Length: 479
Ligand code: NAP
Image (cartoon, rainbow, N blue to C red):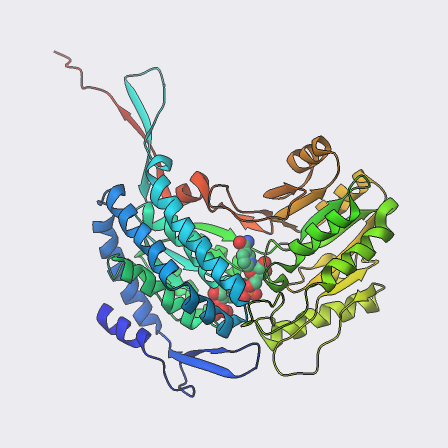
């Protein structure tokens, strides 16, 4: 069955085939390749063979896994241009960002190749008896449900530690990036991983529940929207399986009166415009103390103006299209509704008259509760500026969100920034005078509706392990 799966996944299909996953080029609106989708029966068969592969894989040494994971990094680097172009075609990422993403994946593979053994080394504990330690055993086959916005990074962020820990993996990627999904599987196969250990499945999201319920699947991780998170969490709860959720964010950046306004605006614009604004950890709400509000608005407009729309295939482009026309229309609707409810449009806000999913860098001021730009996640290049009376008011507004993924503080006083970042902001990650970023060496994840569990670092690799208490003592003879 696994050979069959491979055969179906490998060949592009005619665009008209019914059960196919097809990308659409967001820059032009032109349809791309269509790939035959897997059936749920294919998926169950893949889970079974992945489980069989896992049973051998879990007995391999860290040295062996590291060798293959380093090779996966090398394959990524060799084919960086090809994979970057694939992302441009399928979801509109600029080529420059795509190359950087592939490099980040390669470095992540190397990080876990080098550090998995240390992160998962048995930890001795002094319990006052002869011997006690904590062991970290793999869980089994982990199902990963992933989003399109960083098609390679999201998948590798999960897969490198999961495989290094001794698990198997199934990838159900977003339906608009089937070429990327299949390319990721090929990377692991070309690197020499057992063919059944990592499988990509081109499935609709309606099949995810049945796969979670498959006895050969031990756990699930989802990166995506809150709606998808609730559905996956409910399915996992129904069969009592481990679940990690990396969900949306509405990251707040608190800009204090002692900040250098131009420097702060530059950092805020960088934070907002990551991946064309289509990032869970993009800065979305800029909460500015009134003393510097006017100056900040002007500086933010200037900084955001620097992100002109351009062909994503051009090395100099700083803003490509949104991932789809549907997504672009949703962003625009949020902007229009916010303006109707009192927000002031300072920049952008108009849909350009051209084919494709284009949306310009946009700045909204006077953003208040009741407006989508205040209350909801805007997944595009739209900066919402919110006024605050003072530091306490700014922190209150920052925390008055269902989300809690990343957050930032802009201040001239590093001690003040450290205190607010450490103690005040309700988020999984807080950065002072920098934009929020993911890093293989630091835990990544959120609180509240941004999800639970962590990726990266020791915390991430241990999520999909059985953290086992082992006590050992010699059997004393009673004779
Ligand atoms: P999405 O609709 O939730 O899709 C993400 C993945 O979940 C896709 O593979 C999708 O499959 C699948 N999916 C959708 N609905 C599902 C359901 N009911 N049950 C099971 N699977 C389901 O998310 P998106 O709108 O494409 O991506 C943007 C969202 O992801 C934003 O909210 C963003 O903040 C969040 N995100 C979070 C992180 C993080 O690390 N915290 C990183 C990136 C993105 P189909 O494509 O087949 O529908």
